[in-house]
Length: 478
Image 1 (cartoon, rainbow, N blue to C red):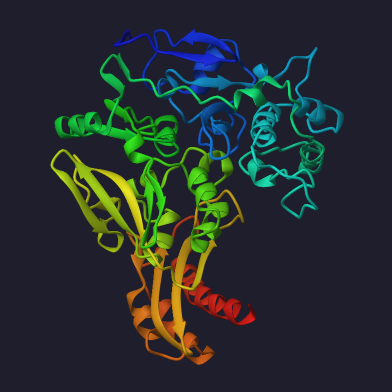
Image 2 (tube, rainbow, N blue to C red):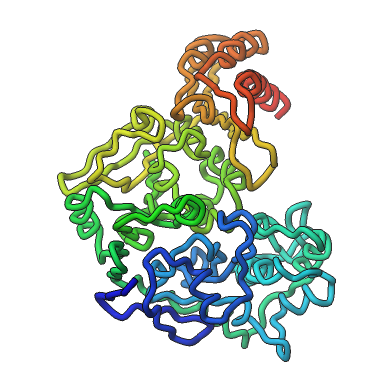
């Protein structure tokens, strides 16, 4: 295909400006890098599950102007990094001058076959450079140097074993004052570039403003919105999807709002889950429980709540939690904005009230929050897995009686839904084991769970009832 660029797209790779050249708009960062001879990053799964493709991108930071953010190169289109700054494992160090992360991995036996090692090194380097990493006693998920093992939750190793890799992570000291990548954090990341690339019948566009996006959506019903590409990247790699028009929105200021006011929390639809997690800093406990269970850090560094809701998937992790929080969505189009309660947003399997010319602009969570909340995820793995069932709870008990109850469910119907019958069985009743056991029987009958490769319908129903009992007894024990 012949590429016609509306401007000369380029990416800074390991400190050197590199033209994107004659590319397909669906070329991934991984394929583009490997074609240039930067073969440290590997393709292991093409789905963002193994981390062998991890690279570092300069992104706006929460504790510093720039944060070196680890992302899955197999999922992102290289066109989305036009004007951006990228570091691969080759750019971190060389055989003659190893980076501290590479050195620790080598001397502590953190690599055998080496296939996964460059990905581990990049994910580890992102945590190495994370501002705010502090020393302490550590726990089962943090080292005494403040290293968060969740930063490696998206990296898999099949031959070395994780203990020496963990030992390497925990042995890292702070970056030195003359470390160029540490110093780079003190300056802002590159501003988003306005991008327009055409290859054959496909186009990739990054408009300069939200108005530009809304104009395109009004004109093109075949447009595909992309932010972190954690879902679209899988569709492109595994299922051969080739959207004729891809519109990048991840760096639009209008979609990156964050505010925690007296009456509501407002989260821009293009903020990544990692950004939201760090900015909320535990102030929404239900979401604080959700974040570590949502895929991996590599995925959360790109994934957005807007994208998770935009797909309309019945097994997304954020809808059950947001339903329990009574969230609403601000939908924007060239016709204006409208507010839709999330409980009224889903209409069918991967179908929503969002029109073709609309996009999700903001997620709004009303305050105050319910005093008793929890997020339960039933899956085959504790982390980095897709839910069989997901449940969000928000309950207010006053003088021993349930005053309010909101329960969001995922994985038990064609859409995420509120457990209305269970809520009715709780509200106005004493918060006792007897009440909860009665309501648990009601909850086991909620939805229309199906049999699939993740779980049977009977298992899903059983887990609903058991989840409510678990929620109650955990509250009593607390």
